[in-house]
Length: 139
Image 1 (cartoon, rainbow, N blue to C red):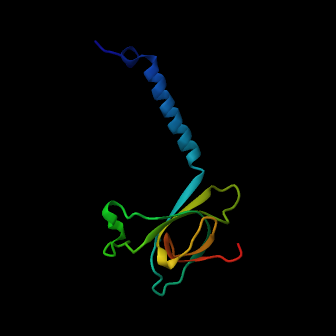
Image 2 (cartoon, rainbow, N blue to C red):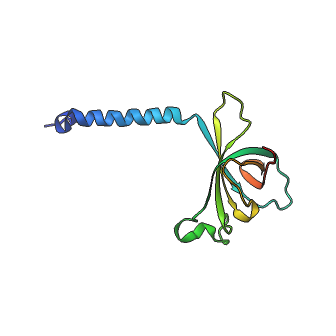
Image 3 (tube, helix red, strand yellow):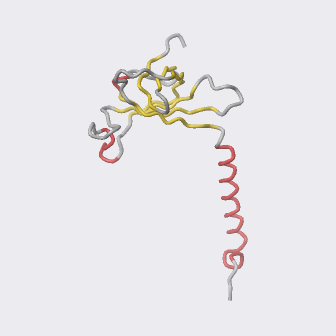
């Protein structure tokens, strides 16, 4: 004796599942219009950047460091004191291309007084390593 889902849960359940699947499909389809560039902060140590990125700051906040502030510990590979999280949009992307969001976790003392709307120049090594940042004047 097999029980079909329709008999067990009625048509409401089937419509609910269909609505969830359609919503996920639409979100996936339109969610691909933006890329995210995750940058990792390192001090320059005499290295020269391979490129400079211009970014408009959309959000700046202090990083809590996770459970008990573990990520802020200097003994962690990517730990440094007073970390900040910067989110912004990469400028200079050709029209017709998807926009690129930039995420960077950096030490507050290396880039003080960053505010929403500021334009920054990020010195980047090959890949995703940011070795310097500065505000761009007159923008």
